[in-house]
Length: 433
Image (tube, rainbow, N blue to C red; front, side, top):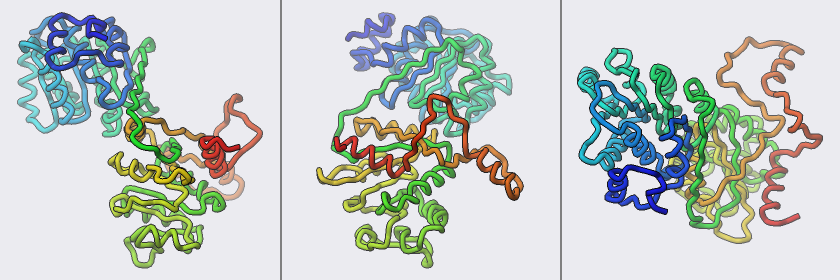
């Protein structure tokens, strides 16, 4: 398929061809006409799907001519590294330096940046907090912004930069708003809802890579916060008959201690830490030692303290926290033997869904999203702790916080434990009755 499908100017087609872009990406085909037509757009796609090139092309097409006093496009990105990357893309496609493009991050002198903005610029690529600071100092005029773009929105939410994004978006009241992200979740929707129009188009592309190796069945529990993760883990591991040998991975040794202390109701002989920090904590120095101990049922392992990769003999591999490098998780779930009966279960908050997407893309397959158990106590992280109540009031209060009224479509007259669900899912994947 040729670049003509994007209906670009001859100059941009030539720039794309010179840069080695000979065919349009799926996200470009689906979003370009909408952006050029003035519609608000929320575009969802994995890393490498062509999101940056899409809005660079759209910006250069929409502005058409250069050299006005106030900026007409504001692009917000999460950090200085992304600012540099976007500027490089503009340099690649903005032939003959038609437009004046300014990059702004938090490391530069704000006085210098104020002077650069007021001297005149067409396109600004900035981190949200510094752009907001320039706006409050009256250096950044948002009245003539035609195109307001938020890139890597999921990382902006992860960094807690929602407030400056919303303030700047609302100040650019004449602008068309475009958001690019790898994932959509409640926190991100909460950020963009004040300025994205109801008529906005949400477009998603899902480019999974080729499967590199056969892996164990992958399940995913999406929960709101770490405390709810612990509650869910407790529910699962209380089913000792199903989860008879389990490794639970976390990211740090301190988190491993936290998880270990959370299970003080489990017999000390059943649970241990891999190379514990404190001598009085139950632990094991190797996976083989854990497997050979018939009393041991749960081993908590910190990624920062773990170099072994052979987990054969452990039927359940749980990632309470996803490792920073997707390759770390993938190495653990590669299938070594066709007859192995192993299930891998991953826990993720909304913020961690980006890592989930990267893992799925690398594996070339989706994880199976599991329903949360009905009896899971979901913790509201925003709620303030209340004074302890007694008797019936305390029981009613706890039930009110943990249980939510179900929709009629979700009402059911049966219930399976989380362990039973895991077994049923595994048998279904194997074609067993």
